[in-house]
Image (tube, helix red, strand yellow):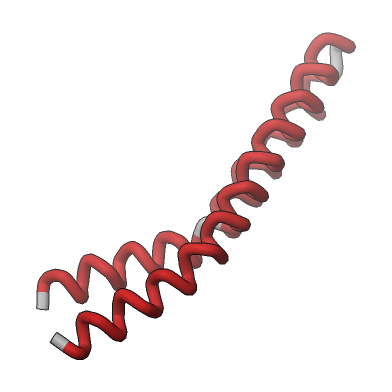
Amino acid sequence: VLESIVFMRIMQIRYKIYIKILLKLLAIAYICQIASNLCEDLGYHSISFQIETIGKLSILVLSIPIISSLLETIEHLLT
């Protein structure tokens, strides 16, 4: 029981960090979409594709802590 309480405390602290990460992910998505649409409208299709690819990779890299925490939580619940 004590272990579960400690685990929940840790998760509350992490929650604030994850909100910041999610806001960054949202900002990256919007900025990349707007930039990609502008390049597409101007006829720069290859640059548009590169912006979308970089945005997707950035989102993937920034989401690694959230994914690892989710896996850790699932592991804790299964034990």
